[in-house]
Length: 278
Image (cartoon, rainbow, N blue to C red; front, top):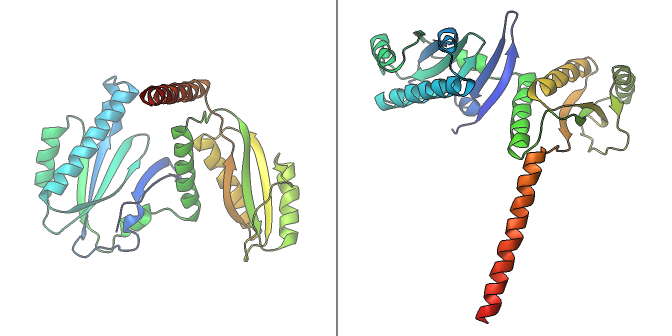
C-alpha cells in the first residue's frame, strides 16, 4: 500500500465539492483493526472574517492539517484518507484503530491548537463505506487526470490562461456512431482533426480527434471533458484524453533564456580553464 493522492471536483444538487483522496488504500480497504471513522470539520467563515490574505488563509489551514495528522500519528497509527472542501467548510477524514482516540482528547487538542470553530465526530465504519464514497467514479477519474496534467503544465511554465487548440481523443465501437458524433460535434463548434493520427483500440477501432480553441484552466478542461464524456456515452463511445501545445509565459521564457545563456557562459569558462591547464 502506497500513497496515491488524487484531486477532483464533484457536483452535488446543492454545492460543488473539491475532493482530495488517497486511492492508495483502494485495493486493501477496509483495513483490519481500523474500524472508526474520524471526521474533523473546519468552518471557513470565521477564518475568512479575520481579514487574512489568501496566502495566509491557505497557510493557516495547511498548518492545522499537518498538526492534526502529526498528533494522530503520535497516538498510534491513524490513516488519513482524504479531505473535502466546499465554500463554507473543510473536512478531514481518518480511519483510526479501536480506542486510539476519543472525543475528549480531540477537544483538548483542538482547544490548544486552533482558535476558530471546529466540529468533529467519530462513528463505526468497519467496511470503510465513507472512503468508498470519496473514491472517484469513472468521470471523476478523468478529472483527477486533468488536475495532474494541468499541474504538470504549470510546473513547466505554461500560461494556462492563454487560449490554444486543445485536442480531444474519442473512440467508438462502430463507424456509424463515429460519423453521427462527428456531425453533432461540428454543429457544437468543434473542429474535426482529420490529420491527427491516433492508435485505434481493439475494442474501440474507430477513433475521432477533435479540437477547440480555448484555455486549459482546470474548470475549462473539466467542463469540456464532462460535456464530451456524457455526449459520447449515448453512442457507446469512450473518452480517451486530451492534449495541447504549451503556451509559456513571457517571464518563464526569459528565465529559460537566461539559464541557457548562463549555462553557455559556464561551459565556456570551464573550457578556458581546461585549455590553460593543458
